[in-house]
Amino acid sequence: MKLIRLSAYLMLMVILASCRKQRMVNTAFYYWKTVYETNATEQQYLDSLYCKRLYVRMMDVDKGNIGPVLISPIKFKSVLPSSVQVVPVVFIVNNVLKKQTLTQLNQLASKIVYYVNGKIKQSGKNTFKELQIDCDWTRTTRKNYFYLLNRIKADQALKNKQLSATLRLHQLKNQQSSGIPPVDRVMLMCYNMGNLRKYGPQNSILDQPELEKYMGSNLTHYPMPVDVGLPLFSWAVVFRQHQYMGIAKRLNADSLNNKQLFALTDNQLYTLLKDLPPLGLKQGDEVRWENVPPAQLKTTAGYISKYIAPDTLNLIYFHLDASTLKHYTYETLEETAHLFR
Image (tube, rainbow, N blue to C red; front, side, top):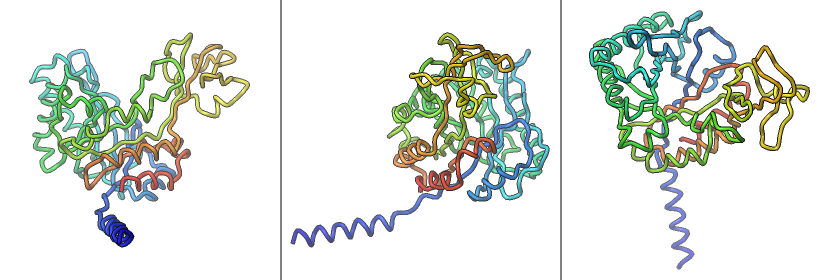
């Protein structure tokens, strides 16, 4: 009798599992360069992963002499692919929002919408369906930032369009102090979570134990749809006498594995064996190489998938760059996306 009951229970579980509604996962990429130009490798990734959206950084907002200014606008040497919708993204430096009057914030909102529409035309598109604002807001800038978002959303040029915002892990966890942004959906940045400037062997791009400190029920019960951003990038963090010096953009894994230039130490740092004047580096400088191996990417996706709530999810890889993508096969990125389904 017990065996019959167990068999019936297992059969019921199989039936329920097969009837479970599969989550719709839309794979997309960020494009975070100052110039857009058609690239065959990048296009192949868009096509192979059936990407319908490309999140394009259009400009930054930073401090000017008399108020916020729009800087570093993207230039389009090619038109965007007809196969993808463009989601314009505007990055706002958090400190810009401090001590701004409502008049200044109103003017900034109008400028952002006006210039985004201009860039959309330059990209070869006629319109867009979503605008995303990227800002690491804090408790002291929350009021002004949320006011700015409301002003952007109320602009007639954005009528019938969605407004989204990026969300850092600390904002996910500290919802009471950080607040919930007045947007239609958020994109959770699952990267840049460690202390980049801290000396020693660590990975400030993606650290699984650190990630898990912020998620769980905080993610499940977030009061609006949450999309997920995962990292596809690496960098070389330089230290001189244990002090942070910056990121050496022209160093890569091949450079660090050159035993004529670097020696790997026990603490997983590479020590420079001679001066490199073109890079501003000196003998004895130490470099921490940080990247996100495919296995780690999948581990993170598998963990997040247990807590993410929406039936429809946008998975956005950061970012679309041929030199970076060579470290990730189509199969790796598709398998990672499938873990969310």
